[in-house]
Length: 437
Ligand code: SF4
Picture (cartoon, rainbow, N blue to C red):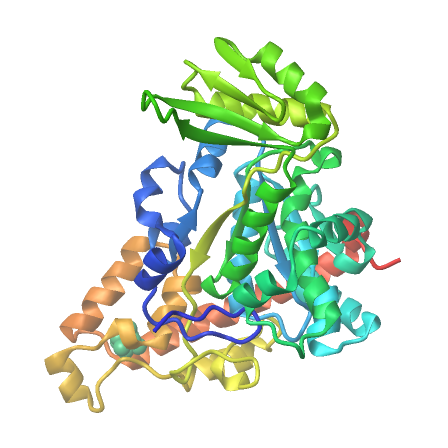
């Protein structure tokens, strides 16, 4: 059976390795050595997959411009799952990325039926305050989709490149799907491509950190990027000689752009009515860069397909899935520190029924939601975490002490985070936030 990825229902993806084959997502560990001081989520394999992250790693190493982009649908309480995404945005910003955060109020309006006012309240109160409290810097851009002219215009243009059948194939849309739901999908593709618009410095690598359920948006956007571009570069083979060459294909209307390209490409180049064949110039990356420059000079689009990273989902504190409709299954960043600690005390562990058994057989940290909390959020030191894991497996550690430690750390984190949220509220006007007009 094929794995179903649906951004609007929380998918239960148990076998992440399937995603590598089915959707062409690459294992993250292969690229880890190329990343300068990788984030804790990367080191701990919480981020397990990526598409095209090579270009982001290279930009970090060389200091070339790149962006991080993500969006939050203002639909409910901000929780630890959102924190994971926010942590990654902040980290990429620290690593030199220009950051873009969209509050997907068009999506909440169309999918949840929320009013614009409610979207704004939830957007600020839940998501924006926590994002800033977690370290988002004021030079990043935060915007509500409904207030961002460039996103709305681009979404309309993107809409011309995709039809109902394609959306149905990616999202399973039916005849019942509303037009505004379809528009909200085009808006999200526009969110992802926006950092590459000329007003934000033009084409550049952009990374979107997501859970695997959001991959349909990435697949759609990557396809649309190619369709929007003035030129595409293809590797071709001469049928007679079998020799490989590069070909730049564009629209007939851009004859002048093709002529300009011909002038700039070194080596042997043949100009045809609608394309250029490049012989003896094997530098694909160099040619793509040149093609992008000329496309932008002639007023066209030259989007680089967005990169993405994929992180594991946390399980619910009671076992099973974490769900917003079951408050006990998750910890909201606005839960009182006392309530957060209480939820941990009641959480499911991977321990045995009796202490004797646990001393004899050891616990199972891989099935323990308390260990997961420490792994994802509470223990910064890899050595300390490893020690806890070993003690658990060998039966020298009991669940009570883990719960106590995790509860104390969670209490501290929530107290500190909520103080920072209040500080963020006072300084909100120092941030670049575009609200609905
Ligand atoms: Fe989980 Fe700690 Fe119990 Fe091991 S000892 S199962 S890590 S709570």
